[in-house]
Image 1 (spheres, rainbow, N blue to C red):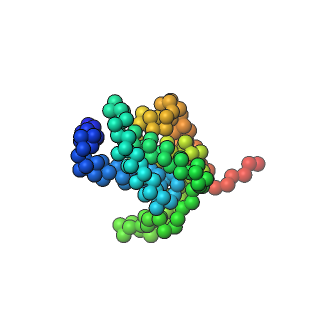
Image 2: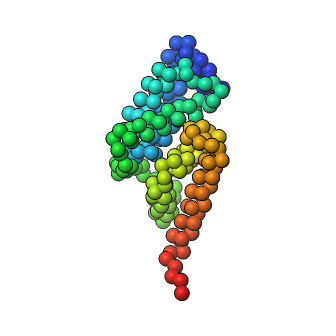
Image 3: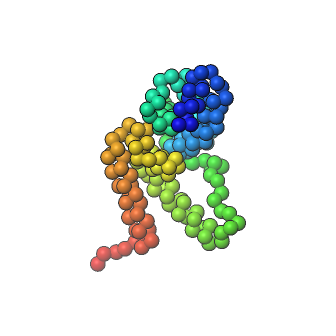
Amino acid sequence: MEDIKLVEGILNGDIECFNQLMIKYEPIIQRFVYNMIKQKQTAEDIAQEVFIIVYNKLELYNKKCKFSSWILQIAKNKTIDYMRKYNKTTETNIEDARSIATDAISPEESFEFKEMKEEIIQYIDALDEPDKQIIILKYTKDSTFDDIAEVMEMKLSTVKRRYYKVRDGFKKHMSKEKRGVSYEV
């Protein structure tokens, strides 16, 4: 409901409402785009373009839909346009990676956590683009399946099927990693 009030304020000319909307959604959009293209500066640029589109097309927003789904759909489309235009593959810039170690955990736990994080990132990066987007939306935005279906322009059943297939595939992948290579006799 808060988003609807902000949208109405923007449509009535209140620039402060647009600033509040940007403060709320800019980190979400940047994280979503970054998870697709793995380039921090480009993700920031695309996020800015998304907000320009939102500002210029806000009167087209259907208030029956969740605003977060609408803006994420714009971000998804803008990112796909960028990827098509520049035929970009995802590369990770080492400088963009954040340190995950803290003083609160032991070096062994930190190492295990880093290993697990790398394993998860590798698994997600190997997924097809739609599956990758579903996982990103589910875990970085904590979106519902309905929200994801709307953003991805897919049927709800398709989103759920793909999500559970990826999740089960990851469980199998991790159980193989823990067992190591097994030889059949």
